[in-house]
Length: 505
Image 1 (spheres, rainbow, N blue to C red):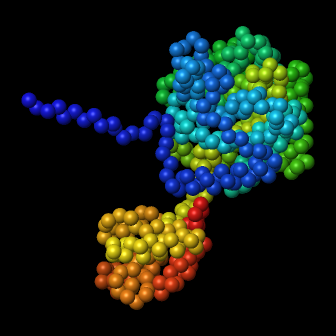
Image 2 (cartoon, rainbow, N blue to C red; image 1 turned 60 degrees about the vertical axis):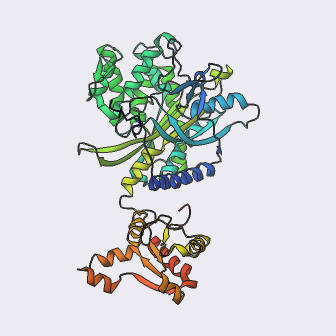
Image 3 (cartoon, rainbow, N blue to C red; image 1 turned 90 degrees about the vertical axis):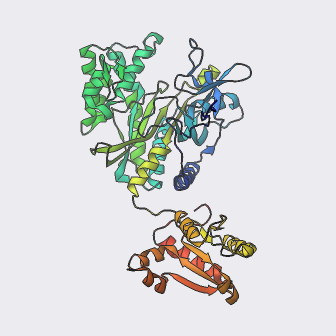
């Protein structure tokens, strides 16, 4: 009887909506996080790290009519059969933390947090289920100066990362203005019965930058079908209601939209007047601090989350890129936030004002890759080749001496010959290799081969005989001078467009 040859081994496959990150990406992430952290701390914010998991009801995403609460979050049940979920953002965990520790925290409490968040949503190009966020929030004050500072902090972070002032802007609006608009079209902004319709309208308005007036008109009406065929149900507004909302959004194209929209809308509604007064004070703060060229009112800024209660803001990169279809488009949003005065009250029952923002690290990293296209790759480690296995301690000491001098270095740990070792060093991005065979050892010397200069020289050599005669970019030095000569090569290539190969560089 034939044996069952069924292969029960698991198939190597990346989970849908997630990504692997290699060395260069992770180094770039580390550098970005260090820059962002430095700016946050310069403003006086304190770091806070909360767990990846929170109880699902603390995130506000549970569905009691389902066996498993998985609307937008990844959830598991603990030993007490309480549902826990991977954090959806950094703000809900902050609200829980403040509610638990409010008697021990200064008021206002200023914190920043950086780490991964998870969303159980449909993945797409550039849209992942796990991504990094960098948040900064101020809890315990209702002053619009805190909202203005959040906007200025966003601008400073983006500029510190290397994006020019002319290539980004911070756009500001106020949910009180939008609530006034909703009242004018017959939707109660505080009624539970109108809550879902209100959110549908706001999310439709939030798509104005992406879909323009025609797309928003569909989302405010019966609904819109996207390119994949997926249908998004609309808000079912009447034509005159739609015209009122779209007309408000179109005012963002006017030269002085704060005055234009303020005079047109705020005089009709008390909520809107209060919102515009706050915006005017924020604009004055921006101008006084010298941020008027980077931060401005824009009536099309909505922010889709329902918990915002006052100023809302969004960081947008304005330079143009090519999309997947080769069309020229703006890069778009890399983060945003706003005031959320009711979020902590979910736990305490008492109003605790708060404001803050979140920057998407993946979006910023993609933007920097475009801005700094052709920028240097990090130098790999110097590789000490193993020419004689009996001399492993000698080679290991060479690697140790290089590391002790602050140079990334490794001894080759495989079992292959010299040709394979050279290929390995190339794949590692090594600036040079160290070679010591029996002849060099007898002379008390080492050979150092500069792989970067050698590649340049080899490209001009016509045949193998000429290459052997020239031995491009290879030199013999006394073994005692190994560290000095390797350091010179590393310094040369670090200054010629490669990032340092020192640890953490």
